[in-house]
Length: 617
Ligand SMILES: [Zn+2]
Image 1: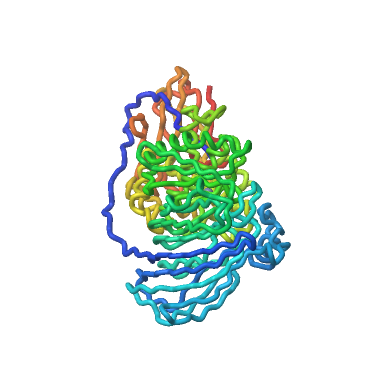
Image 2: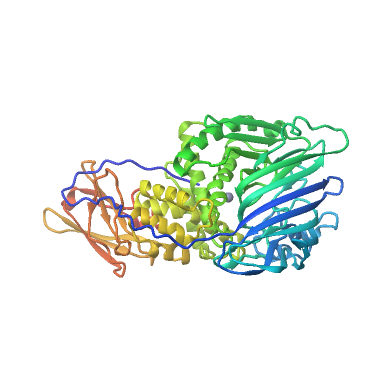
């Protein structure tokens, strides 16, 4: 999506200046906990049948204060069967994802996906379990007490579905196996209890832990995966051979909450080592349609310079860009992206998915509950990174946008006009339309950061985002946690903003009502809050001589003022939100004034900018 800062010359004013707000509240220690897991998996793959046998040893350390008598697992492949919840939902939703549509309903037995559970054991005790489509419920023989750990061994047999959505075999570009959401995955238990959401095609949430995954597959395959390959001297993409038999690929991924892999006989593996030692891996089928992949390492290297400086360091040793999937999808230490793209599109999707390392893979929010926190912040950071690359001239023919986030504001306004907008607190699976989910998560989510820039100043908002990274990485932050970090950084009260922006669909609309001369030396301006959503107001007054003056009207509810850095600002008394109108005294005669504009930088999500401008002379 979109943005940059417009520098301005401001007329010097004698009235008081707004000062930077930076009172830090004391950082009380919350009683935070999260579960801990370790997965050890052995997979034996049959490429003729597109099936595999798996053994999973799952160690669970119960860090919660509760005793657990049962466990829930996701069995995502079971969604790819006729009459599954995902199939039914896709059949009736008015704007079905074209990749899904009615395709699941037409799958044959050999094309469906499934997980068949053979045995589940706790120690040497066999456990009872029930399966309800994509959710497996396991009754423990011995309850798991707070602070205790247990090991669950599961044997399963799975079939990889024809690729419908994200995961599956034979994607449209001819990648054999895109193996996402492919194993029995423990649901998250957190302060709100179990999150055993049936899978209908979107949003994930996983427990933090280490993954050890061994994959045995035909010798002619090259395998790419989350984490680090531990036996590169035994097997690698250059050592693949047409000789009969299988090779075992061993991977390890430390402190992650999911594991993806992909396999294809035609992959090449190229790598690029950055100055700081980080290694970027690229796995793709070399052909005319993928020729831009050769340019991708240099672009991603420059992108990472900006990303690490602005959003926090990338803490793992490597990252893999893997051709596969059905668009772009994020996983720990890796992404699956379709590869037949021009450089701008390839860089765009690569940056977006890489940015999810920050907003989901490290700041591991419950995506179903807070999709705007991963897709929104990712889209914001992607846009900012792309603007930087466009300024550098790295993307051919691309220039930075003159009005940042214009496309996002337009898309937001359009859904408001349609009447289809839903609150950002809606659970991702339960939006009535894919359209409403998309705008809420990606567009309004990204605009959340733009609104915080407007409220607090770009530097403070960005510093807050960095604080959020340092305080919450490797954890499961919530909406409240994010806003508390922003409050601590800025000293502002933001609960009113969180309530209006996240929990309602109320909108912002401010207008200039009238201006009149009030004697020879001053004039009075009447502003009107037309929408229900209160905001502080920035006003730019342009004079006949070409100079400008910026005026700022704080909002009472915020209990603080924005940081304007070195800019001169005329600060007025707070606008109490209950008042629909506000009078501004401007200490200049009316005849000197040419134009007055509310929100001159166009950062506030004002749904009607036409009434923001008054041309006087
Ligand atoms: Zn995304």
